[in-house]
Image 1 (cartoon, one colour):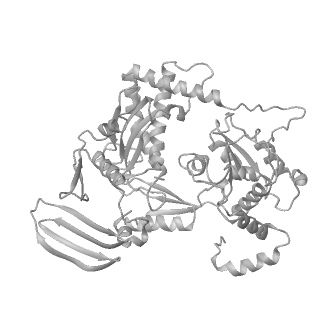
Image 2: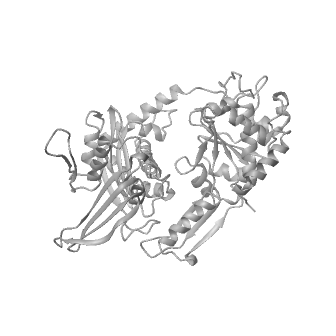
Image 3: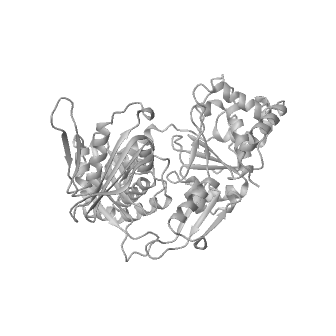
Length: 542
């Protein structure tokens, strides 16, 4: 969190700044200024820096105590990300006259840090490190100074330590920069395997096979980082994936080809993992014939038979289904286009469900029969680990979502309970920003809704971008998005937003009451009363 949030959660906050031979100070209490900014002394001209002292407000926290291990981890990481800089933590110790001071200093940066992290593990190959940033002579789509530094290795035994940062900010949940590194590593190792003809017949290596024994520390520099949530735990910039993949790929391939023995050892680990994965896959035969349901003709199926990685997208409309087929990963993603709005199945008896062609096709495609909330259905035929509803980002698309969610809640509740149902979130707006000189190339932003669009425009305004320097496009439907846009924003696992459908613990009765009120045929009066009461909070799409 930044200083603004820290100030709001503190009883007192003091900031002292040394700069240009002067010392300035400002003090806040309860979020308000109690000592305005003032010059309070002199210092040497070369002496500069900022000191922030904070007294957390106990009413906002379970405990007023700091987590010393967490502080140590963060400060050590700062020393790693700023090679040569000494970072110290000084704190009083109860019962001792002198304060206790810890200092971290990593002249070799990421390489020495990762070595410490995996000290108890057995390395399969020597550690590799690299840093690569965009320079003046680069003619790509990235800004000067953007890029990444990383260190990584493969382990024979031991737990894999994976850490990532963006502009010195820790990202414990990873994000698109990690996805970019993984893409670069997979491509480099896969190319090496193919170049040296190391792959046994019938074995297909996947990204997770290559990364299952990898330990890494990644530090990315991104011009306009976008994070998920206030705590900035996860990077969401789609361009960051391409950036890190671009600056990491060539150095990795060069290192592998210069160290063939190491490359072969890494390939051996990846192939061994792929073989273990394939042995554990539950085989599902797609039979056609007597007594076995034939898969819907409009289903574009995936190649994999591993339900842990397979995904089915239920796509609104044939035109959008066409774009989705071109945008999908043929190995693991299947597409089932739906024509028109699905039947409101809330009060439909299970025996009558298959009278609706769309519901029949959905049930056959996923390999599970309709069932009730108290039934114990057979899920052995389930063909996809993720079943994602993909509809337009407008009100009509929301109607499709509601009808499909009703179907799964009412007639496939076990799939909801086991976490197999998802809702994809395609963007409603696209913002194209013209290049702002050499240091800022043309950029593209996607916004899920009006609130996200407003946030993007506010940020552009703060950057000084004029209204004439950008344009806003609104997607009227999925069919208007070309396959590349649909892939980057909605279908690619590393750059999409996919919401898992869950019923909160203890909310079964409340959830059922909501569905009854909204979808029940005899609840018109209750719906009208609800709309009159909540109408002022509605989101309109006119």
